Image 1: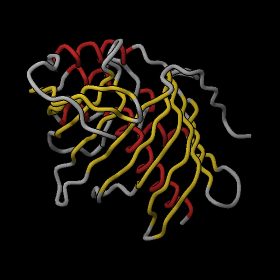
Image 2: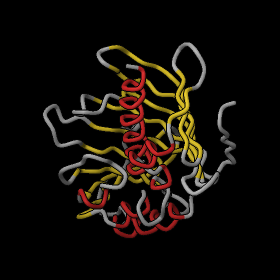
Image 3: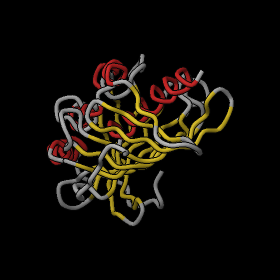
Length: 237
């Protein structure tokens, strides 16, 4: 039973981490109108800057029920350093077999570790990690968030808004399922996606919301912060 719980935990966690860094609600509304900058230009700038990101802190919140995925929230750090697959660490809150689970995770290279409320970290087989998800895909310029930003369909700059005190432009569009497939395992249709991009500088994404096309219209909301802040992630001892 423990092996089954670990497998279920890892599948849901890694899938939502991917969602999290692939899609990276706002605090207050702002100006709207024709004076807003062109959405395609904003997304192009954001894609270029995101392709160079080496690390980031993320928070993830699931609003509603996404079939087959049980994560309610997650928070942590990710980095492209630390080997071919990069590294990640943080905490997660999710439902496992009808019960609430809150625990820690660490992913370093091709190994993953999880820790529940009691006991120490449990290491998972490298072969299991490789068959489920490659964390390097999250920040990979060719497969990750930068690729999604480059391939948003019919984008429109909707408004100026502040997200956690950061001035942003809200840009909405569509993303094809093939574009997000590496980052959101199991997506079987195109999705609506909204980005909040910094108004100044290189327009890095601050937040994103992915609308999942199922009953109840659930969304997966993610914020990014501390971009390229040094992150040291090591395997638990």
